Amino acid sequence: MNSGAGTVEAPRLDLRLGENDTQPTIGVGGRRVWLYPRETKGRKTTNRTRVAWLLLAIYLGVPWLQWHGAPLIQVDVFARRLLLLGHSYYPQDIKLFLPGFFAFIIAVFFVTAKFGRVWCGWACPQTVFLQFVFAPIERWIEGRSFARRSRDAAGLSVDGLWRKIAKHLVFFVVAFLIGNTALAYFWGRDNVLWALSHPPMENPAGFAFVVAFSLLFYWVFSYFKEQACVLICPYARLQSVLLDERSLIVGYDARRGEMRGKGVKGNREGLGDCVDCRHCVQVCPTGIDIRKGVQLECLACTRCMDACDSIMTAWKKPTGLIRYDSLSGLEGHPIRGIRKRLTTYFILACVLAGFSAVLIVTRPETAVDVVRRGSNPYYHIGADSILNTFTVHIRNKGMQRRTFEVQFGESFRGRHNWQGRKFAVGAGQLQTLQLDVTSLRDEFRFGKRDLKLVLEGDGTQRKFGAMLVGPFGSH
Image 1 (tube, rainbow, N blue to C red):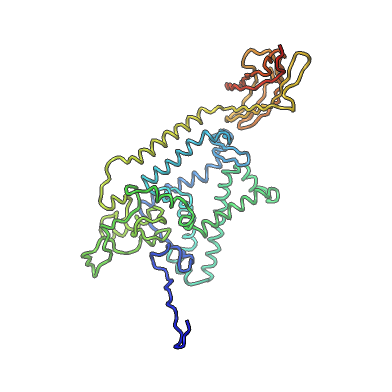
Image 2 (image 1 turned 30 degrees about the horizontal axis):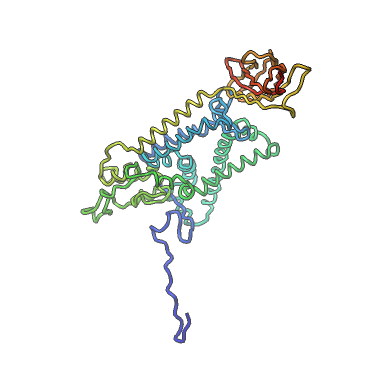
């Protein structure tokens, strides 16, 4: 502001962000802060590695396995069906899975309320692939965390350039394998193998899908990394309404650890067990300080637990300063009694899952749909016969080829064009029949009549019906 006495400057605001004002991966002005998590060893890391390799074997192996000639699991989006253990399920079967779907949601509530974010730290594909596939590759090519940090801080060099190029080439090859495996869950093993063994121009759509899936996985695991958990994943937000003071979390025992410090010349009088080494922060894949309490960015991956235990062992102190515990337990309040919320979740999940299982197990192996065919409701055949025409859709939902025969289900003075004839329907296939039913005119006293038919074959019997129509008031 100008005046006769001179210029008076407006006070400036300090826009610098403090340590507690932003996420660890976001710097001043929204700049991305790259993390270099230190490597860690310990009992929890060893157990997580075993679980991760088991999950990787399941994820990468399942879409290539078959059951009675059909994919073990496939969400066939093109045929609009789910292949599961040799059985085919279609959109009309969604009612069978709805109770199971709600049971799964309630089970998520139960697991989170009881065990916290154990899914994120131990079983989430993002965590498993990032920490147990891509991180070891990065460490193998570019070195340990301190070497990567120093090399990146020093700027571009020949040594750093070839390592970056080699790392990203390997990343893309791995992402290509993961992307094709993910595609096999939806497109089918044989289609993916065919697309990989033929020139792209012979199947441009399949090639485009493969490239898109591969680039997506490459981008997520080479660049986006922990940001997927911090910024996108809704589960972190959901946990805030599911956790309570008795839920299991990865927590820091402030009663035992504070005040922090290494002491002076070995004298730690008045200090807690935490020596403020910051190893728990340095190994965290999202860069948080677990000593600040429960945070959305915490994956409960237990890396900080192993890091802290190693320091406590070196200082000849009890382990468990950072441990699996509840907020009540960390505050020294023992947990007693049955948690009604967990009991309710458990009972509801079991009931709904059981109901869904019964529906799936008792589902008929054959589905029959009857649709009237032709522009006229019926046709006159001679002086005393009426013809009704139908299209019958027969779907074999089982895992074996079946041979069927259509028969009348009760005494009926008439005939149809499939009497004495048999036909086959392959596993998971749809067969369409043109069914022509000829009946006597005097059957239609009120212009209509119910027709009961039976589909029999290979130990299967399925009853279905149709409405026959004819002239009204024949007598």
